[in-house]
Amino acid sequence: DTAVSQTPKYLVTQMGNDKSIKCEQNLGHDTMYWYKQDSKKFLKIMFSYNNKELIINETVPNRFSPKSPDKAHLNLHINSLELGDSAVYFCASSQDPESLSGNYNSPLHFGNGTRLTVT
Amino acid sequence: GNSVTQMEGPVTLSEEAFLTINCTYTATGYPSLFWYVQYPGEGLQLLLKATKADDKGSNKGFEATYRKETTSFHLEKGSVQVSDSAVYFCALRDNFNKFYFGSGTKLNVKP
Image 1: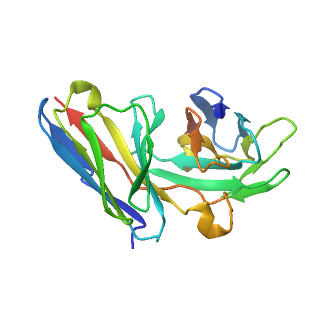
Image 2: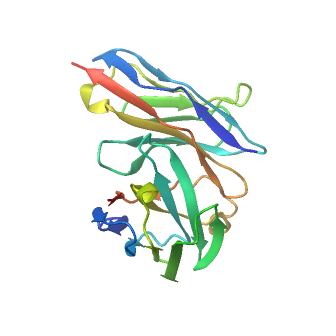
Image 3: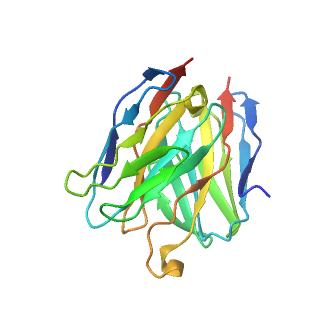
């Protein structure tokens, strides 16, 4: 009964390859996110989707493309992988404040991360 | 813009020592504040939260009080254990539904 699950947990691949990371949440949340955590543990927001619509798209290379087939899933596809893409990628979800009567205190719920190593 | 600043680590303590990890924030309006903990090899887990001024969040012996006058949300624990060794993140959620994270503070507790 994992709340936010992402696969795979580890991904080792060579430069130039294309790979995907899948994420699913069973919390009924409206908004899903992708974060990148670097080797110094710094978290950077990449994308956010609300009910399958792109809400946040930070300065991320076009090689990264999120896809949300429904509001419970947000997958991340990466083309032409580069060495600098090596990091831990976290999926997360949160409840939309509009559905909580304007309440902004709902936290983020994170998956366990996908460690991507590009060689 | 909004931001969260927390003390740099690592913080190294002996078991049963008192812990404080400082966190200050900059935000317009009335954000909600959170502390997350990340154990090695795992994702971030919510540790505690506070949603308005003077609220105190608490969980597993950890506490933090939402201080609007000093824009702070310092994390404290009276007696740390080796199992508390982890990275701790302070975060806020603003009234535009955006989350902001601090840079994380690594805590090492030695037996």
